[in-house]
Image 1 (cartoon, rainbow, N blue to C red):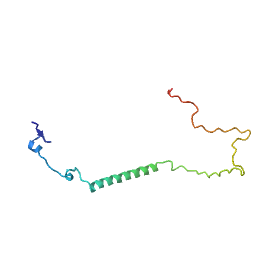
Image 2: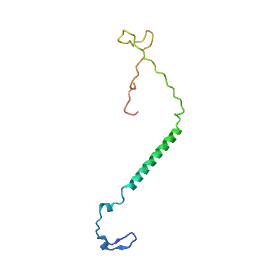
Image 3: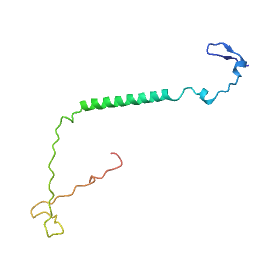
Image 4: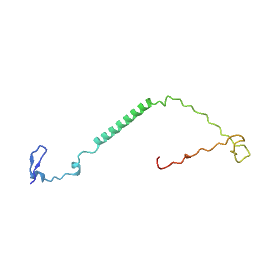
Length: 115
């Protein structure tokens, strides 16, 4: 037969181990819900907000971007096409070199061998 011992090492009788106790669901909970839990959650949220605000203030105080001056450019007036013409001629004038459009991809082929 198996002998049970409690946390102190004393033997526990089998009569104690075979007892059945009926407990309601509220009594069986390990902790109560309600105001104490709400206070802990609100205090944790408040501490998180205070820590975030402290990090923001510290970050802004050490930020170097605030010291640089921003220069704003005046808006450039758009050129209007000559009146009387429905299309615009994009060919370069005689003697001027033609401009190439920028490429979207690298013109050199890539190999998959990694070498």
